[in-house]
Image (cartoon, rainbow, N blue to C red; front, side, top):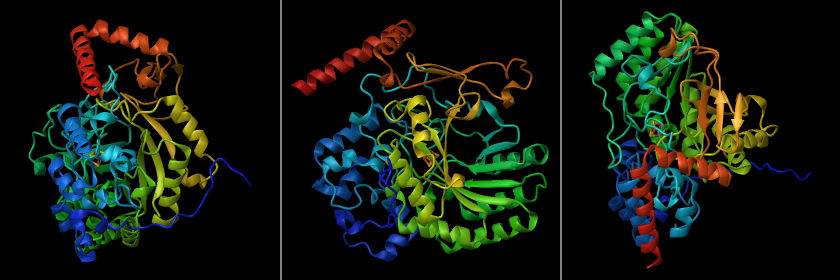
Length: 468
Ligand code: SF4
């Protein structure tokens, strides 16, 4: 029967890294070695050029370099494993790199960005206000029964759209990162202390950054301390590296350590799981499936995926379902959530409107098992995750949706109106009808006339340069 989506079992394939000039002689043993992967990460355009050589045009390298100088909120950091999933089935060409879904979010180019509205006027650093909700440094207490513990501000890979661009990674010319002030050991002690004296919290997301960048003994000791707190019932370790650097999770030390933690969790009746972040089916390779299987073999409860909905990466019915089936069929990773990309600076070209997200939620229903059908959610500032259909009102001309909540975040303990207030979320301006786009242009001009005129002048100069 003809269906809008044609399911097919997709065999996982590890792309051949020897097709890339820099890695022609790299052996399978080197490729599986996490230290080799970390030592050969691509961190700048010169290293990118060393990997691809003259396969890519100079204009592409210049485009990436300009993005780093003028737009990027994250520096470049790509393990070879992730580089290898760009243009996976062929020797890369410039056009194929521009079109590649993994490249589009992990290695942004200036020309990818929205030329008129690279950032939404209401975008902000720390758009979810996590730092405002820190109970102690790095421990966000937003929801009544759960907390987010940011153990460290680094990852083995940096995503262009990172929601924690405020804190995570190195500073870029556009963004000076905030720094933790406490020493790491004191910060982790303060988190454990808070959880001991806050029995209402039963669920701890142990994150960062990425826990794969914490030396294993330090992560194990932190999780052991959580497991000793009687009131903590769910622990989730957040690591995109399960996909970006699966070699880390396949290392003997990590497997043995996870087995110890899983045994303790089981004995205490606590659910210990790994949450990863995969955004496109091309990233799901045999090594990723092997790492997920190795973690499940340790006896943890589950490995789940929280992806981000990104235009040009996965925001179609086919791309989302291909990804979910690759995760579910062969990698045994539960497709769990897709977050609509947050309102951070520079993200307009990746973001979808709420209406598009609603259509995509509709489009993926009924193909996957119900328990593996991901919810598409909007993380509404000062509210938290809401399913895309849960809005209270929606002005489709200006792209303003409003949302309510049924709990107080930690910054509204004494606010009598917190549960009645409507909180706003904004669609990307390029998705609005002309009337809405003109309204935002007038708003921006009234709010910051000098910046708007300077941006217009710079756009006109750039256009003249292209014409010339
Ligand atoms: S892995 Fe997560 S925390 Fe790290 S850069 Fe990507 S989105 Fe940000």
